[in-house]
Every structure is written in structure tokens, then in C-alpha cells.
Length: 154
Image (cartoon, rainbow, N blue to C red):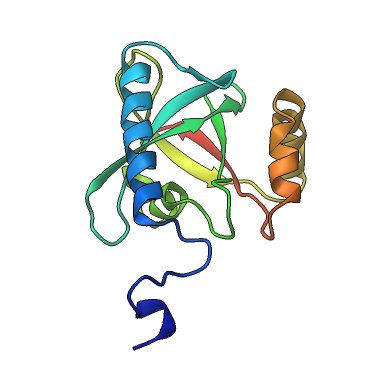
């Protein structure tokens, strides 16, 4: 048995059972609000990102802040706090062809994700941090570069 498999042990950066339960409840509440047409959280626009679990194959929903990414495109940041990418990002990258977004009060729209890099990421990052400076603070406290993903309708 490895150290992480021992009772009460988990990998560093992995949330505990109570934290996961609270996050699930908060996400479900936010998703209900978005579906009723209220898409703001902490002064940010929020959408529901629909993905498929990379291992389970089960549908997953995550409320995610979004930023303008050009005509008919949304930029999202895989911050999630901690030293690893959020589950929604891992799921999105595992099954990019099965992703969709729900904007406040609207039906789901199938999307294609594209992880930005180089100058394209830099330009998007400047736009994101100008709109929400807290992301720069989050990034500075992380040991990984936050992926920026552009979602475009299929």
C-alpha cells in the first residue's frame, strides 16, 4: 500500500470529501441559476461547461467564468486553484468532441475547444487579467501555467 492509499491520506492538492461535497452543492446551485437566466458570479460572466468524464464516460457539468474570445467564441481559464488542472479541463481535453456550453437561459451549444499558446495565449491572458485582475494574482501563486481555452461553436 502506498502512502497515499493509507486511510485518511490523499495526494497533495487533492480536495477532501467535505470540500468536494460543498463544491458539488455550490456548482449545482450555480447551474440552476444559469439555467434560469442569471449568469453572473463575483462580477464575472458564467456559463455551464458540459463535458464527459475521461474515465467514467458520464456527463459532467461545471459552471465556469468566461471572457469574450471574439465573435461566437468564449475564453475560459483552467485555474481551479492548486497544483493540478481542474477536472473539467482534463475531461474537456479527453473528449473535446463531446463538449458543449450553456449560456444563461439558453440551450446547450456544441463547441470545439482550442488551448491557446504563444502570442495568442499572451494576448488573451492580457485581456482576461485586464477584465479580472484576480486571475493574475491566482496565476502568481501557482506552480503551473493556467491553460486558456477558446471554445467555438461547432
